[in-house]
Image (cartoon, rainbow, N blue to C red; front, side, top):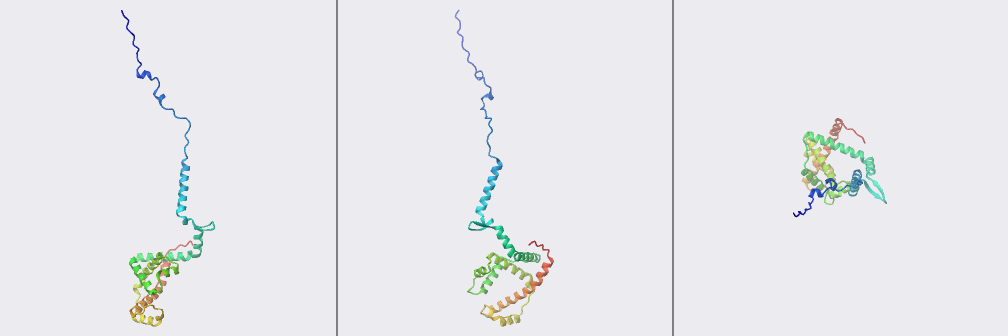
Length: 223
């Protein structure tokens, strides 16, 4: 009887792979990775930010540089405070007190009123003098000038309603101050005289009124 040829048994797939699954995974290096410290990154960001601020706003730190030597902003502020600080502070205190009194009385000044006041003032200067010339001479900016006009108009509204000016007052003023008046026609002279009389009487009232306001106010000074 013929013998059957033996057939070689092929190994199955799972028998061909005799390694464990985890053995096939790449082996991570045990050498620790070098990481950039977070604190150093934050420090670099802060430094770069300060440099950017300094470059774009040099005037915040340095007021001027003379032959390589800086004059710092705090030095300038210190000198200005010692020379003009008291006067500036008094002005700011006065402004706040007037604003508070105006708020209590329901008084406000519009931008249109400021523009009209400015126009009247420019007209009174004459043709040879401009507002820019006056501001440059006084060392004021346009914003400072408008703040002064706003303050003046506020005080006028607070105290000017009780001021009475008669025709006799105007006639007498023109007669005694003709050389100081800029207007050339009769109507202009009367209006200019009326404004001058109004300002004088207003100033007299302001002194007494403001002294009383300051007495009632609680003001703490540290300068």
